Image 1: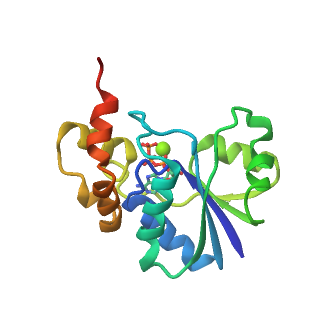
Image 2: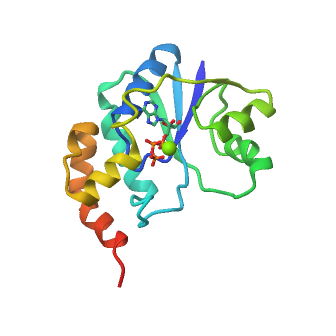
Amino acid sequence: KRAFYIGRFQPFHLGHHSVITSIAKEVDELIIGIGSAQTSHEVNNPFTAGERVMMIRHALEDIDVHFYALPIDDIQQNPIWVSYVTSRTPPFDTVYANNPLVIELFEETGVMVKQPPMYHRNEYSGTEIRRRMLEGEEWKHLVPNAVADVIEEINGVRRLRRVAGTD
Ligand code: ATP
Ligand code: MG
């Protein structure tokens, strides 16, 4: 059994990690789509696709699942988005998603979508973590240690603050 899970992972956090831990128990292989892959260096999308691949690779070292982390660019054409995704991924039989548009687009093509439960959504949220980084508040406890290490290596908080600034 092979499943598909997509997010922007800006950054990859413990909510994602919890969901993937659960999915891993149900599948043989997991395809992780890194959405809006072409976007980086923006206040809502600070990290590159390659940096997000690195976060996911290191964060999932403690989970026993065979996964593929694949960047997926935005194509701005919802009617053909599912075909686009399937053209760039190994075949899969199940989709795990909570995003309403993702659910709608897959279900219209007849693919089964499972909705994983949310874990502490108030704090385990990309938006909340980026807000904390900008405000200088604690955020490292909301991501896997490996992700905090990657963000430090790439000087991610400094980048976020710079791209949030104005001239
Ligand atoms: P942002 O606030 O930037 O949108 P996010 O936390 O929603 O970030 P995404 O990369 O957009 O993260 O999410 C990818 C998938 O993970 C989405 O389907 C989202 O619903 C899900 N997700 C996000 N946070 C949690 C969480 N705490 N528990 C379970 N699933 C989550
Ligand atoms: Mg989101």
